[in-house]
Each structure stands twice: as structure tokens, then as C-alpha cells.
Amino acid sequence: MTKSLVGYGPIRQTRVGVSSSRGFDSESLGYHVGQTLGYGGERVYGRLDVDYDNKGGKFDSKGNRISPDVNQTDQQDTESLSVNGSLGVELTDSQRLDLAVTYYKDEQNTDYGPDYGDGLAVLFGAKPSLKAIDGANVENEPYTEKSSVNLSYSDDDFVGSGSSLNLTGYYRDEKGRFYPSGKTAGTQASEVWQANGLTDTATLKKLASAATFVTQSEADIEVMGLRAAMQTETEVAGKKTLLSYGADFERENSEQTYYGQDLNTFLASNGLTAQTNGLTYNGGPDTTIDKWGAFVNADMDITDKWHTSAGVRYQKLKSETDTFTPIYEQLLEEYFNSPAISGISAAYGIDYQAGDVEKGSTDHDKTLFNLGTSYQITPNDQVFANFSQGFTTADIQRALRDVRAGFVVNSDNVQPITTNNYEFGWQGKHGDTAARLSGFYNESDKVVRFTDDYTVEVVDTDERIYGVEGSLSHDISDKWQVGGSVAYTRGQYDKDGDWLELDAVRLTPLKGTAFAQYQFDEGSNIRLQALAIGGDDKAFKDQQKDPDASALPVTGYMTLDVLGQVKMPVGRVDYGVYNLLNKDYLTVYHQTTYGDLNRLPASGTTYGLSYTVDY
Image (tube, rainbow, N blue to C red; front, side, top):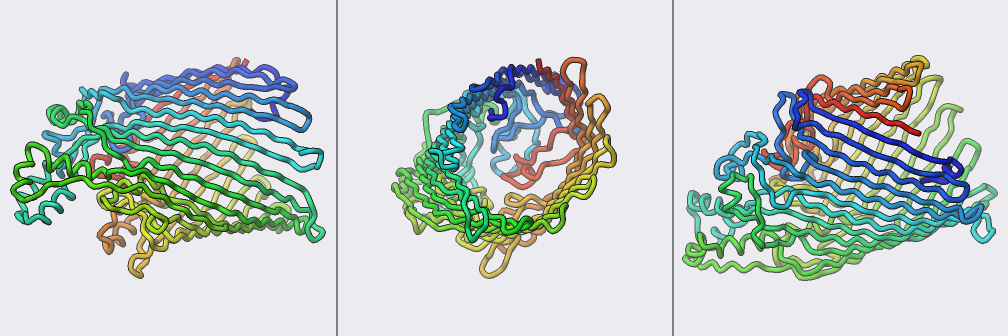
């Protein structure tokens, strides 16, 4: 809710909608209902939005139900509730207090699971069918829950000085439970067997296959922070200058836990039934990250055409991690001490005891600079250039999840990532045509990547990312508008002196969009839009030189959507036909991440229809 709604009066809106797959299969049907109530008074204004969604299953272009995404969980068969509220008060003519509160909760309730094959064969290298199998029974279904509170105070004439003050405090909490999935410690188990004298390949393979576990992950991230900023108009070298300065603090607490599932039950059902077995595993250490910052920035009009800005920021990052047992240490201890393996372990003198990573802390700081300028070369054309620096840490908890016992958490071993970002370009509008063309170049001193077994590591080596983006729109008439965009990005990282290509997990391949829209006299419209992704195998070929790399080739694809709005005597109808041509394809994510069980097809043609009325 913004100050612009002061005096607006009553606000009421009702929304209903339905969605379906191409074949109108009953399992694909979803629906949505929503209601908005608000009021904009002379001094007080507020708004409440409540939306409920019930999503059905997804079906591919052949009409087959798509298997659940067991790696990151999907939105099939979920119910969700979203609540957004805001309240504002004009305390005086210059002072304002605003409160915003949000809540979101979704939970999956599905009868379908993935096809692991007989005896969970997919976990041991068999090719998955990718079929969705009826009969799933998951004791604790996946869910997502998010809540946030934001309270801000602003004064446009702080103590009568003409300066403006803004104070903001915020809090948010995000929780989530993922789909149960099989996990194998076979590689790590083989290393231990070999270290203790077992070299027979067939025996190693058989014993490694027994190192199978089923877990379900839950995560909780809590963030709270404060920001204070002032803006003051002054003069520097005779030029009007807007000075902005302030400080901020943010604390993030995160924890992740894996809950063990009964393996015999999972095996007997070929992965369809998941029941907890009472065991828990660390998903990395409980972590607290504090971020302190202070900044000052100046914006100046050097001439009526030339604008420039410059600033400096001091950033401090501190983290504390609790003692934890790495997950593979826990799994290996359970494996070597299991009844089926313990006798063989004893014969080879293996008495595996899981080790810990002791609690630790890091402390880093850096002074960062930014500089930007723009020049109005004609009344319709502007060129710009910007430089900025970034300073952050990788997801510490996620990165530490895969370390081995004895790892020492300190400022030397867990280092931040520093980036330099450069941008330059042109934008303009000539008659009925608007366009923008920009280029960028970013460099950093670390690489965050998935390895070939999908653990995460932060590699201390240089990285560079660069590219070009362009957009164009043109009003053919007062009814027709066309346009599009293109983005091309490349990047490399330094591997022993060679620059190797970054893969599509990090960078989006060549991407293009296009649209044509027609506006009817009575306010209705229809829009045809296209999305094209280019194929790319550069990183896959290049990273053959890196044995720890996990790059995969990308196959390009193009999809078409039709969207529109019909103005009714009361309210409006919105409609959409997505993947209009029923294209059979895999998104970049499903082509390049995790293993074969993640090569899931995208949805075929999907329909959406909604009705909205304001009153």
C-alpha cells in the first residue's frame, strides 16, 4: 500500500479462475479464488488480499502425467493460501508509518510418486522410465511456509531540515519440506573398503550398492534486519547534489535436517511409500550470519544532460556455525555398523565412527565502491555506464554440508566472494519505437559449482561472466504493438591456467522473446508471445578437461503462448493458452541438473481462465 492511495476510498475485488491440461484430465484441473478489501482514507489507508489455489497434476505433450520432481519438489497436487496485508498512517503532512504483513503456505497431497524401478534400480544406474506411478503414500508431505513483517517510518522533512529520513525494520521466516529421495554413499563406502585392503571390483560394487539410504529434507531460514537512510539536498562545486547515507544490519539464521525413512518399507514399495524411521542427520551446521553495512552516495547533475553518481559502502560479514556431523559421515557409520555389513566390516578391521566438524566462525570486511553516469545525447537517446562491487558469502550451510570430518571452519577456509560488475549501454525512444541495448562484464575471485555427484563446492579461482542484452518494442498503430528481446551470456573459470566454459546451471543459454499484441476498442486485448532457448554444448565439451565438472549439453527449444483479456459489462475475463503448439521439450533446469531421474518433460498445452470484478 502506498501513499498514492490516500483518499482513494473503498477498494473491493473478487477473483476466480480455473486451469487444465490439454486433455482436460480431471487430475489436471485446478482452481483459484481470491478477495481484496481495502480503503484509502485521508489519513489512514489499508488493504487485505487473500488468495487460495488448488493445483492439479501436470501432463506432458503426449498426455502422460509427469513424474514428481524428487530433487527440488514441484507444485503438483498442492493447496496454497496467500495472505497479504498492509496498513499506512499519515502521522503529519510529512511523516508516514507503513506496515506490511505477508503469509504463504502450500502443501502437497499427491497419490503419485516417481518410478525408481524394481529394487530401486534407478539409484544404481538403471535408466528411469520417468513415469508417474499411482499409489504413493508419503507420511510427511512436502510443504512451503513463508511469513514476513515490514515496518517503515518516513519523514520527508526531518526536524524541519528539508532532509528525508527512512527507517525500516523487517522479519521473514521461510520453512520447507522436500520430497523424500534415495541417497547413496556408495562412492564414499568404496573409498573406505579400498583403504582397508578390499580391491575386488565385483565385491566392491556389490557392497557399495548396499550403502543406500532414504531421507527427507526440511529447512528453516529466519532473517531479520534494520535499515536507516537519510537524503539531503546540497551543493558540491556549485552543482546541486543529492546525498544519501545510512547504515543497515541483517541477521540470518538457517538450519536444515534430513529425516531418515524406513528403507525396507521404501524398497518393498519401489519408492512409493515413505515412513520415518526416527533417525535424523545434519544437513550442514546451524548457521548464523550477520551483515553490517554503512554507505554514502552522491547524485549530481553535472549539466542538464549529464548525470553522475558515486558512492562507497563498508560491508562486514560475520558467521558462526555449530558443531555438526557431516551427512556422509553419519550415513557411513550407519552403513558399516548395520547388521548386513558389520560382520564383513569386522573381518577387514573397519570400526567406522562418524567424525564431527567443530563449531567455527568467520569474520570478513571490505570497502566497496560504485560509480555511474548517464548522458542525454539527444532528447530521445541516452547512454549510460555503471561500475559496482559486490561482497558476499556463498550459502555457508549448503557448502559445508558436503565437507568431511575434521574440516576447520574459519576465515581462511570459508572465504567471501568479491565481484566487480561493469555495465554500459544505450536506450532510446524514437516515435513509436523504443529500444535498449546493454553489455555487461562481471568478474569474481571464486566459483560456486555443483560437482559431478552434485555436491556444492566453492573453488578459489577466478571467474568471468559477460554478455549483451537488447530489447525492442514498436507501436505499429494505436491497436498493434510488437516487440522482443534477446540475451546472450557467456562465462569462464580458470582451471590450471585454462579458461573453461561455465555451464547452464550457472548461465542461461541464448534466450530470445517476441510478442505481438492487439488492443480492441472496448479495452480487450490479445497477445501472442514466444520464448526461444538456444542449444549449447560448449561447456560440456570444454569441461572434459575438468574431472570434477558436471556440465551437460543443452538442447534448444521454442514455445508459444496466447494471453488475453476480455472486458465484460461487469469485470473482465483473463485467459491463457500456454505451450500453444504442445511442444515436447525439457526446460534447461531439467536438462542439466541432478541425474537421469530429473530429466522430466515440460507441461504440454495448458489452459487458464479467470474472472475479476472490481466493485
